[in-house]
Structures are given as C-alpha cells and as structure tokens.
Amino acid sequence: MSLGEAETKRQQAIQFVDRVGRDSGKFEEMDARQYAESRGFQVLENPQKVVTTMTKQELATTLDQAADLVDEALDPELTREELVGKVKELSDLIAGEEPDDDDEDEAEE
Image (tube, rainbow, N blue to C red; front, side):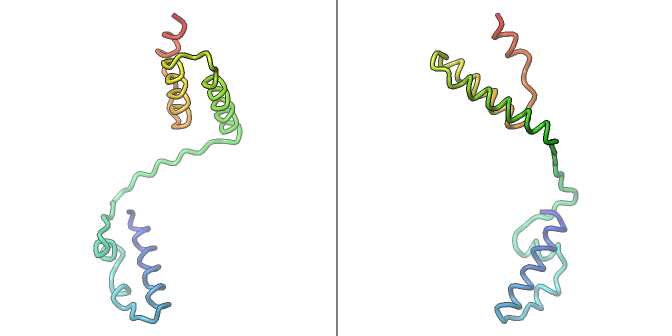
C-alpha cells in the first residue's frame, strides 16, 4: 500500500477505536509507516498506478467492437477453434490489448 493509504487506514483505526470507547493513543503515536507495518502491510515507496481513461467515444467504440465479437462468437456454424479465437479476441479487447495482426493474416489464408 502507499504511504497515503496507510495514513488513511491509521486515521480510520483511530476513529473506530474512539467510537467504541477505547484508548486510541497507541495508533495516534504511530506514523503511517509504523501503523502499516504493525498491521502486516508493506509500504511501497513509489507505487505504480496505471490509470487509463477513455473518452466517451473510445468507450462507445470498444463496446460496439465487443458486441460485434459476441455476435460473431454466437454463430452456430463456428468450429471450436474459431470460437476459442473469438473469445480470445473479446478477452484481449476487454483487457485493452491491441489485436495481433498475425491472427488476421492467418484468418485470411
């Protein structure tokens, strides 16, 4: 957890202990790092948060692509391998991965 998250948890612990009528001095004396370690958490110095945001248009396009892939996967004439391929494409799309051009080349051959 980040140092900020540890501090938030420490403050929540103080509030909880106060609410139930106990002495919160133990938590008040600790800093965020000490609190995290006492609870068995590791404080990460520079946690990497990957935040990807999509515009409404990008989200709409992705949802349309997903719907198309689902429709294609529901084709009763697909072989098992083709169905697995469609499900993999859908999984990759939802995970935000770029489609492999190799897969498309193989499908055309």
